[in-house]
Amino acid sequence: MRSRPIGLLLSTLAGAVLAFGGTTAASASPAPAPAPGSVPSGDVGAADGCYTWSGTLQEGSSGEAVRQLQIRVAGYPGTGNQIAIDGAFGPATKAAVSRFQSAYGLAADGIAGPATFNKIYQLQDDDCTPVNFTYAELNRCNSDWSGGKVSAATARANALVTMWKLQAMRHAMGDRPMTVNGGFRSVSCNSAVGGAANSRHMYGHAADLGAGSQGFCALAQAARNHGFTEILGPGYPGHNDHTHVAGGSGRFWSAPSCGI
Image (cartoon, rainbow, N blue to C red; front, side, top):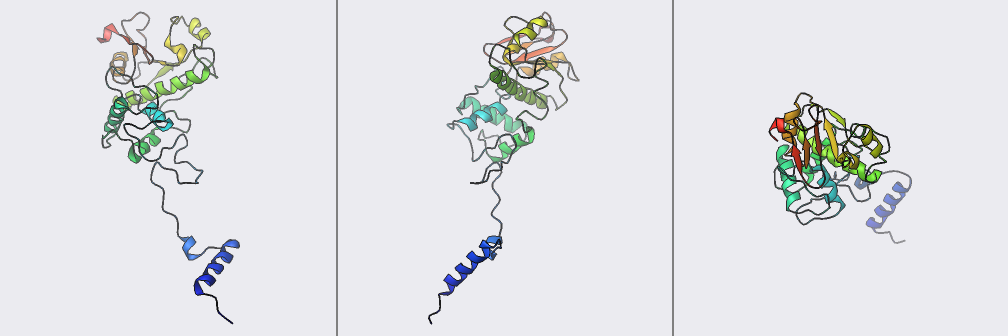
C-alpha cells in the first residue's frame, strides 16, 4: 500500500482541525495590525466611530474622503479666506491641511496621512462633531433643523462646518472653553428674535458667541483667521453683547469697537 505524501497528510489534518473549530500553528498567529487610519479588507469595524480614512490624500486627490477632510480643516484657510467643501484637493486645501498639521505639531507637508487622520480622530465625536461643540449648541430653535432658508440636511451640514471652524479658533486661543449662545434658526425663530431678513443663521452658517474668558473683541479678531466671512461684534448695531460669526458667500466684517 502506497503512502500519501506527507504534505497532503498535513493539509488534510489541518482541514479537519479547522472544521471542528480548532486552530493550527499557522492560523494561531495573529494577522498584522492595520496601519492607523486604514480599514483592513473585509473588516466591517471602523477605526473611528464617525468616519475612517485610508491611505493618504494630497493635491490632486478627489472624492468623498477629501470632502470629509475639508470639513475638518475648514478652520485653517488663512486670514480672510474660506476653503470650498467640494471634494477637490487643490492648493487651498493643501495649505489648510498644512496649517492644521502645524497647529498640532505634526509635519506640515500638506499631505493627509495616518498622523493627520489620527489627530482628527482624537478631535471628533462619533456624530462627527468636534469634541468641544455639539449640534444642540448650534440649534436652540428646533430639534429637526427644519424651516430655514435651506433644507434641514443642508442646515445641519453647514452647522457642522461652523463647529469645525470654531474648534480651530478655540485651539488657536489656548483651548479655553468657548460659549455658544445659538446658531441655526428657522425663519420663524429668526423673526421672533428680530434677526435680519437675510440672516445667515437661517442657513446654518452662523453662531453667536458669548464673551467667555476670551472677551468679545478677542473672539471677533481671532475669527478672521478661521474661515468666517461674516463677523459682527461690539460697535456694530445690536452686537455689543455678543460676537456673531458666520460662513457663506461674500465677506462682511464689522466690529468697530474692536478695530474691525
